Amino acid sequence: MAARVNEETAIRTGGADKRALIIDAALNLFRHYGYRRTSMEDVAGAANVAKGTLYIYFKSKDELFEALARQLAERVEADLKSVAERGLGTEAKILALLDAKLGFMYRWILSSPHAAELLDSKVELSEDIFGPVDKSFRASIAKALKDGVRSGELDLKSAGLSLEGATDTLIAAAHGAENGARDEADFRDRLARIVRLSLRGLRKSA
Image 1 (cartoon, helix red, strand yellow):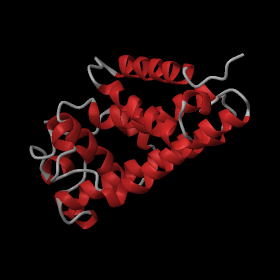
Image 2: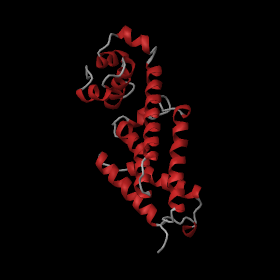
Image 3: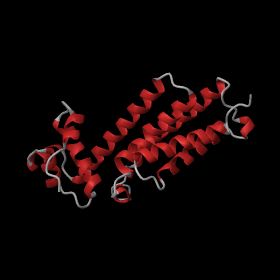
Image 4: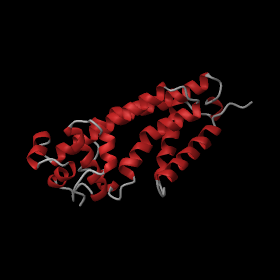
């Protein structure tokens, strides 16, 4: 099993504190070897800290996983906020929002051979952690659609959809992008096609 944080992880964490370094090391191990097969000793080795030091920061593997989940949630929230602040067109904004949430999860969780284990009932990213993120995500998609209607680009009524219905349908369709995706590039291509196809039916007729 990997004994050290790889170069990419070291670069990504930069000057982050030891706690963040431990969390990143744990995520890489969980993705590559699974939650159950990864021990606290493995995490300590990957993060290049003493096992005793690791337990100062996290009392158990469950506590470490919860901290990891919270960090992932914070990253998604930050990405959603960043996309919302950019001056993107409707289609580009919706695709960017979907990638900020679903693409992020695909890259860090769903592309792992241990995805099912990471998302099962024992080690799932709990509702109290990701519930607020899901609400922000849904609200961001709804706002992007609403802005498209206000600009005259989209016409939900002609498609027989309410804002809530259009939001539900788009998000449900986007979740299907992971099915059969060969890799991240294929996932992103599927996501882009889903957005184009979904918005085509909502665009206002000339």
